Image (tube, rainbow, N blue to C red; front, side, top):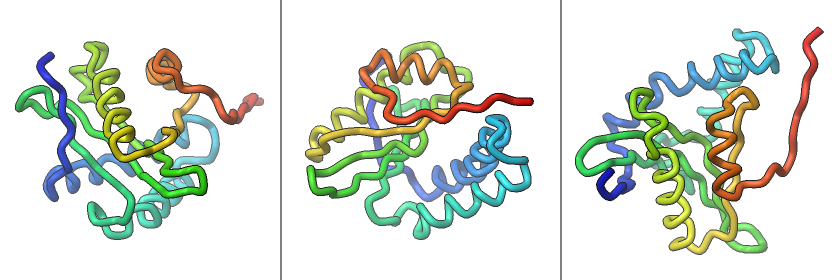
Length: 156
């Protein structure tokens, strides 16, 4: 791996991202058992409309492509918001291309995000992860993220 860098998404990258992001998010919601797929699809559409009303120009939201040299290897969507204790960051989405997973890119992207947040004065980074995403959960815990709340369910 050469030096990993984050760069703002282009309009073309954003269009490609949005094409599959809502669908994937809705499927994750449905797979978690939180709601049926049709309702999850409506929730995903509404969440993206509310959070990114102006796409790449939505205030406080940063969507970056991650590169290893010239190769696009993933993406990250981060929101930075000023609060009473200082700026807080929240990671809404984070992806490594499927064929490149388990090669250290996830950790490298998260380290680049932490550095970027540090440079912007953020005092914390939050994120959500679906319970079934064991690989991501393990990575986040290894990197020092702590559970702040937890939902549990028993299927009957």
